[in-house]
Image (cartoon, rainbow, N blue to C red; front, side):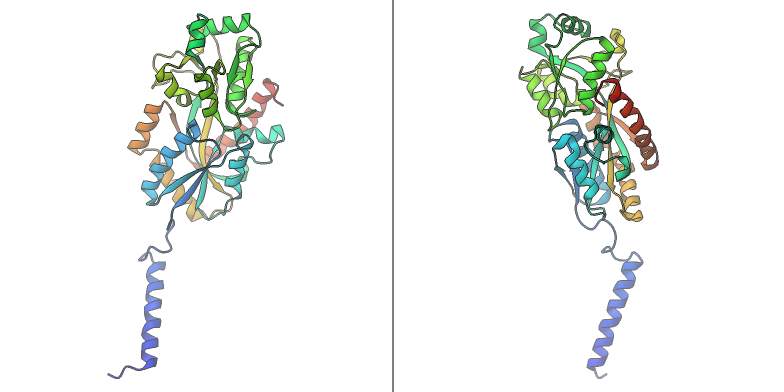
Length: 329
């Protein structure tokens, strides 16, 4: 058979049509999301509770998606810079991020127009209770062994004790306000724009007297003996620290926690969002992720996309009221 130029061109065309047909029918992988690595934005600094939770969760998501998820810490502005970067990212599924409690504070404060409605929520991952955690040496020097001793000291020395949180009007800053309201004490809340990790280091180094951050964020310094947790602002003890009582157990009715969840830019294609939701659902059950969270003292508090969206809607009102209670707005 004579092979002509016309026949060669016809064969090439047929091959291309077949390849396109196979891809459209699922026979090829080129059009299936994701086909490359995914960037994950963390609005808070490396080493903090959000960062450690996010890295563990995205490792689990990567197993399901078959791609590498790389965490990028974009900090500043009390979390606004990173939250804005998530909202402004290209809506193609290749930039996702973790949104946190502070998102509900920006509009009441007038610092940003960002709200939960600026995103497509994927799932809630974690909630962590605030604590009253103090520098061990300072506590020992002043005979403080429990929450009552701390309250008594603060009562006798109004406005002298410095407690760190994270940025101004952040969850751990507001936690200090809750503590003051519930106990009648007067303390100085020192803010850290980059997040809780810096506050914890300062407390461990004796530069401030303590922090109102989560157990997970203070864990390494508690275990080293540099910090001592006097009470957890929760209705039950943390399973990783069963010997640490709640504030309520000690007669102080104060409960307060942060929340962290995954979100994507608005306008992300429905099929991409659905794939990411599936990855989140599977990641939350990943054995290594569960073990990490349990060992780190961070609570797994999963809500799917629909339930998380409703939670964020309800929280927007609740947080604004809480901020009024501590005179932040």
